[in-house]
Image (cartoon, rainbow, N blue to C red; front, side, top):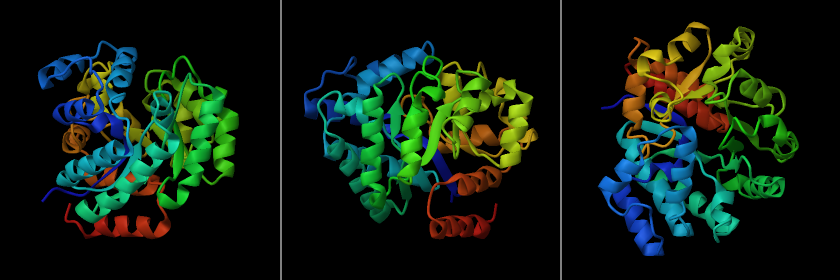
Length: 324
């Protein structure tokens, strides 16, 4: 039996395995840039982070209908559950889909329907944290926030900020994240993946981040690293993703051990597992390769989760009951 796992950082559009993506694209009449499993595997050999973003947009445009969003969430719940997942926080980028003809309500309702089906079929608890896309208009960013708030009672718990972080720093989005907080939504921006420590500092100061997605470049600033550790702010660390995008040169060079040595709480996630040739078990194994217990990462996930306190208590009880 696999040990229990929590995943706080997974882009559901990036979980669709190639054969399933081809099926959905054909159903929707969308021409993928590659129409075989082998072709998609080759396409997923990324030169750098920008190339990854370009490919991500191309292939995820195949997702167009509420049923597509529901199905891929349930598919991933089944995959993650097979690796021991008991709780997921799923990211999606609604404005990307809306720009290409889908409505916000189709996207949100599809994913929210998936939450209920995934719980019933696979016993996985899921919350949703839609991303604002860097470089899109502030009107689009506000639309994401307002729709997220409309679906709070169906499992939407926070708003993120994703995309080209070096080109669009957090400070540009301070007002829209203030709106999100006023509407009862948590702040979970991407920062410090390919941009430096200033990106993380901006996410904390300007966006009042409740958790940082990635955040590994905080180590560039020892004072910031101490601040994060002192506040108990959880970082969503995605070891194999960082290798695939070139953010980190090799697993031996990964900063996770340094973060832990500095007292920083780190949860473990896959990011975009279908595109990064990984799964939740493999990322946990990579994280544990320095000798740390998986319980350390599970407990960071419990503390960092944006769930209600009764769910958090259940997750903590699962961890306490397992013989690690």
